[in-house]
Length: 171
Image (cartoon, rainbow, N blue to C red):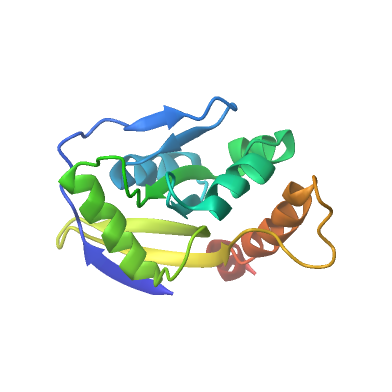
């Protein structure tokens, strides 16, 4: 899937990020994440969440993102981008616009939703071209062991990571 959306000039050019307290760094600025993704050759892991109201989002963070297996995988494999849609916490107009543009580009209908993707910015038009590899949500199914949800999530993530368009082009 390739979608274009207008480049949003963000006043804070630096890496607007936060440490989750688990050994992960979640960025909130798409420009920063794209630069890091290009530099490290890692795809972007976009986490669409309602951090202050979505129970399943909070559960995903607790039961998957806080687990060492996910932390190790994420640090080695992806650049983390949190795309938050809070109800009570204030966000800058620029951040809201960025998150809404990405929500629209990926057709997000519910939370939590995670997309693994790459992005490239056209310097002429200032638009991003997004290449989606696949999406993930809260792990469910008969093979999910309560207390080990991260195993199913990482198994599903491995399937998505195999969809790497650059890897397929080489074969």
